[in-house]
Length: 167
Image (cartoon, rainbow, N blue to C red; front, side):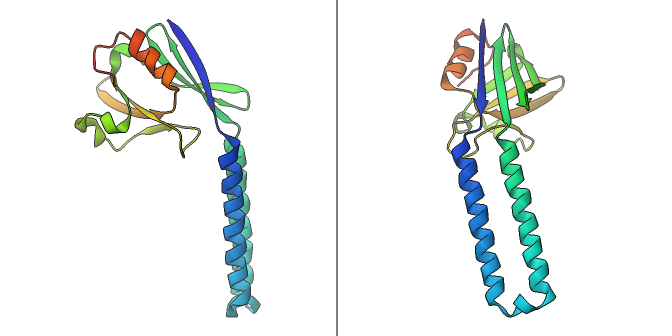
């Protein structure tokens, strides 16, 4: 059994966030210009810091457009790879027999909800449906959050031959 898919970041939220950053920075800059600090060194330093912060945030948003994840279900393994600038890096390789739970947060058993450490393999943080995978790794139980399609999840449920409940 093999199923693969690639999840990429949508461009509209990135453009929206960049416009939001620019708008907020402009309003703060205008407020400083109208304040008494405009002619002091503090006003100039704050304006320079605002520009630096805006540039860093915009670069971070633009770089996030070049990140995607490949989710694959091959034989008895769930594989998650990071694709950045045409280079692929394996992040997780989980045997299906080690999976304790796959599903949405609302259906997650209570004993796993309290886990603080979660690895996020997400492209679209707002508005996209995400799933949790809880699995055994040696003596530890690990938790990841990822965004496969509903078709991918149904394949895991149908062909996964899991020992544990998958919702």
